Image (cartoon, rainbow, N blue to C red; front, side):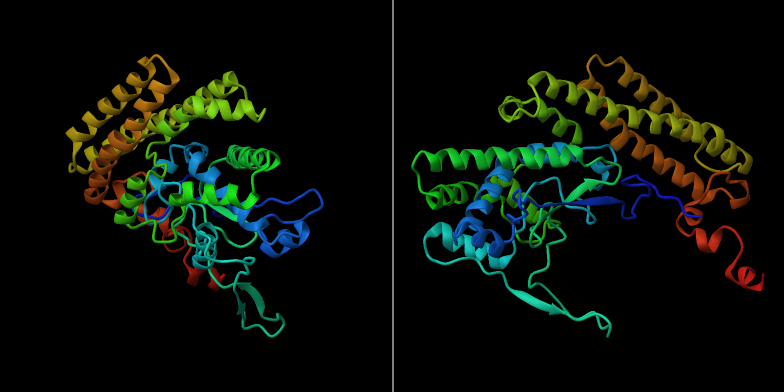
Length: 381
């Protein structure tokens, strides 16, 4: 049978695996905050929806570092930024219609409520009537696109538990809602508060291609949160800004944030160590014997690679703090082990198949045609 690999990047040059965290908010009686018609009707205020969206945009811009922290794992460091997952730059896609509306709202150029466009989706099946869906599809290159009634956090790793992701989303949004409410209760106009927030945080809205390197540089130059290293992103959990946030919202104390950072860094390091030791075993027990049996291949480089990876693991153990261990583990995994893998791949290309004792890329990627009985044999039985 097939096996599910909860590993973000099991094969080089082949798209890895992630998950999408669909996130929405509703009142206690079920009114959706991200559905403009529903929330505007429930509040009898045509500007309720843009005010809510302004708070979300502000929360994302202020706390993009925490969102990046929440998706940090060793495997995700391989995926983020490649043309299979959004980059480690935390922007949001709102779509051209909503962006146009909010831009006019903040610039005082338009009035009235936001009415999203729709289109008919015909599945071509007589038993199912055509469906009415948002006119604009979500941007699949964005880490946090609006998809009609919800946002979709598209950068979560496949091996990750989404509890921290949703803790962060709920906390940063609740904090911003509270900030808006305090100012409104003090006498400020709700629309003025929202307009100020949109003008201040507009930079985080980006509807273009997030895979494009020029666009990534443009967002970086804008000052949108960008943390390429998962280890460094985890470290932001204990910044003064973030510990103050979690304490203010009664989610975690400063000490609990510090403990959580250690746990996350230790998990990162432990994952890398297991993979590094497995790599050493595979080289010693399989690849080197295969190369010797074949009398061909990079034997000296493989023997040196065992020493290099083992020394890297020893260096991680020698580091004093969890943060320092994780920093070294990231270098070991994303630099040292990458170089070693290339040596192993070079051996696989020259060693005869009958002497290669590990599964080949062909066997791993095409199990149906290269492992077990053929289709013809199955049907003959």
